[in-house]
Image (cartoon, rainbow, N blue to C red; front, side, top):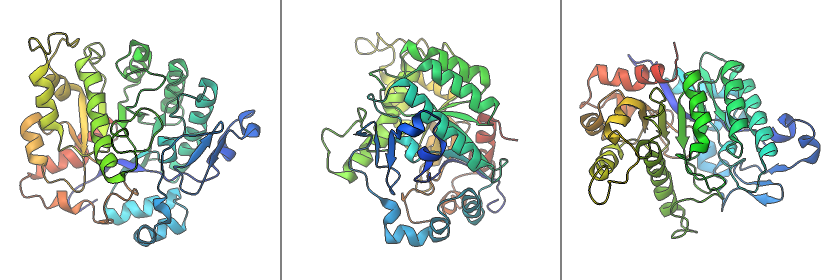
Length: 366
């Protein structure tokens, strides 16, 4: 707990071991050694080609190593992760990948290999969560090269491994946008299983990525653009292209870029939905703000100060909290909750909703 509040952190990341693929890939893929990962965990060669652009090895940064010295020394193990949660006052962590943000996200990776890599990652993550399955909750990495394999893997991870969400990137895989009807079986499976779809971005993917054309070697600009804009485009797919009307119980989260952008972007989508002549071709039959309040959610980040404005626009039922631990987004660990806890603009009940109640309902955590 953090003071009076129980806390679910919805955007914690694991730092996978360098030998993940050698250890967890099934035969015959293991003997083929199709994946080679260096110590940065984000620089990988898969089937002879890189799956990330200009990666930065933040794990080697001396300041980073000092901030996360205990966990770094323990090679980012499950028990060390729990220890850092205790330092922060986090009760439950929903786990996103790091290497898994890049590993299978390339069009040159065939469906069988992508499926095998997803299974390997998910099996590793289930083993990682064994450090405390009540506090560490996995999201399923899904091989979108094959929707059939994605459906099978989501079902396996939820039913057999206890995972609480499906993780996908917003970037188009094999040229498909997220509202492509090809994805319908996956969305139906998530709905049937009662788990949300979580969309999150990490800069440097080799798939099409917003901002890379203008800022190919400018990390500051590209990072600022891609995380937010990719989620905006993903929102257009779900809330503007008749996806959520057809799957009315499905929850979709947009995590990893804060939530302060919600009022502007929902207003922008609302402005053009149904408008003549610019929006009368919108396939969605219900307005985006209504759909988001019914089925969307986003994670407020430690550095944000605009949570009350978000509540004014979309209410306090659609915001959760997320730290991005242990990515080097800000040097406030282990005090990442402080900014939110002391916000005098928020009531005790609103803080309780964001820090626990909303996420507990979405991810079915008791």
